[in-house]
Image: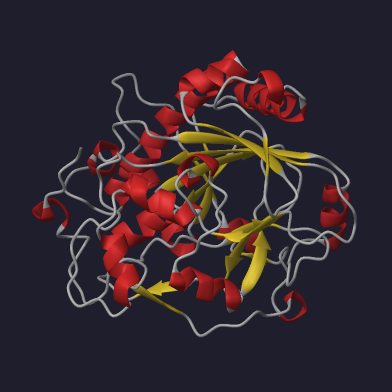
Length: 373
C-alpha cells in the first residue's frame, strides 16, 4: 500500500471545495455538425485536426545508462494529455512485429469456440449492449493460457506504462519524477482483448461513449477505422499509425490532476453514429470487417485512494463523499456496475457527472484548479 504524503503533491493536488468528479465543471457545449466545423483533414500548423487531437510522440530508446526520456519529450506528452486526454506513442519496447503477433494471438482466441475448455479467467464474453465480444486477462498466468506472445506483450506494456507515468510526473513538474510509478508498483494492470465482428451498414456505435476508469490506457488496434474522441464539440477520428499505441487518460488521473488532464469520452463509431466526423466511407468499410483491439488498463495499487487528498465541503452530496473514501479497487468495481465488475469491465455504471456528459452530447470538462504550468 502506498501512503500518499500531502507535502509531495502539494504543488499539484491542492485542496478546494470540490471532491472527485466535481473538481471540474462541464463546459456549456452542444454537438456541432461536422459540416459546420473545420474539416477533419484541414491542416493547421502541419497537422490535420485529427492528428492535433491525438498527436504522435516518439519515445526514444533508453540510453546505455538506462536514463528515462528527456524532459522535452515529457513536456510534449503532458501537453498532449492536457489538450485532449489522447495521444499516440511509439515505444522502444514494442516493435511492430510484437504488436502484429499480439493482434494475431488475440484474434485467434476471440474467434475460437473453446469456452467450454477455456482456463478460468480466459473466457470470451459477449458484451451486454455493444456488438462485440471480449476477454479480460488480469494476470500473466491468464495470458499464458491464451498465448505466450501475450505474456511477452504484457511485459513490454508494463515497461511502456512506466515510461509514460515517469513522463507524466516530469512534465507536471512533481518533485518526485517516480511519483506515479510508485502508485503503480503492484502491476495491477489488465489486458482486454476485444473483437468487433463485421456487421451491417445501418450500425451505430460498435462501442458506446465512455471514459476509462483507471489512470492510463494503452490501446493497440488492427487499423480498422472507428475509434473517435470527443473534443471541442465534435467526435474526431483518432488516426491509426502502424507501430504506435493510442494512450488516453482515465478518471483517476483526471481526479489526481484536478481536472487538468481530462478523461475524454471516446467510442467506436459506425456508419449511423450521431455527429461523427469520420469519413462515412471509412465507417462503411470498417463495419464490413472484423475489428480487433487490445486495451491495457494501467490501474494503480489497490490501496491507493480514488481521491489522493481529502476535500472539505463537497457540493455533490453522497456520491462524492462515497467515492472519496474508495480505494482504487473499490472505485473500479463501483464504476463497472457490480461485485465482479472490476474483472468484466462492462462499464454499466457512470458517475452522476459523466451521465450528464453523455446525455448532453459528451462535453469534455474544464478544470477549475491550479495552473500546472
